[in-house]
Length: 165
Image (cartoon, rainbow, N blue to C red; front, side):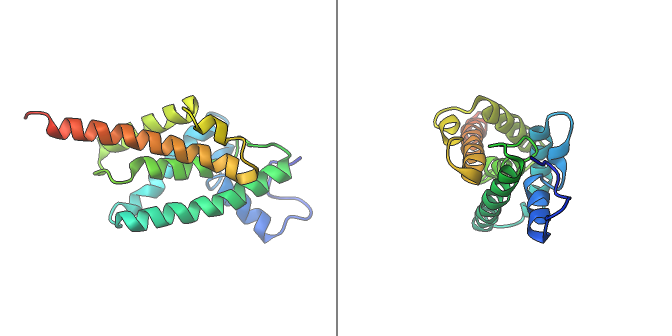
């Protein structure tokens, strides 16, 4: 069992998988690695602000698929179904929580808070999706947490926008 990308028999793919899966090392945070990974996700969303929604979705889908492979690899190497160091799922979930919304400090804060809340609560069917095999179980529950956070933000945005001035 190993939570480190280095050591004998670790090739380029294994090292890249650890870099991706751990969110450039943020998953090694001694305090709240999921929160650290979510913060990295928020920071990595900043360059996407000017991209079209289609491009943002495409990038999230690409990182999701790479995350399935990388997270599955780290889980297999460690012998742990969902290692705490794997936070690429938080990065993708954070991105999903921000889709189709006007980006600003309030949106970023609320998206971060709501995504972390949904990731911890794991409303149905998110918790059940953790049972999927390998990297799929690692990634899909956070996709749903991101969707739930986004839906709450969409409702809040529309309620606030429709409120009298």
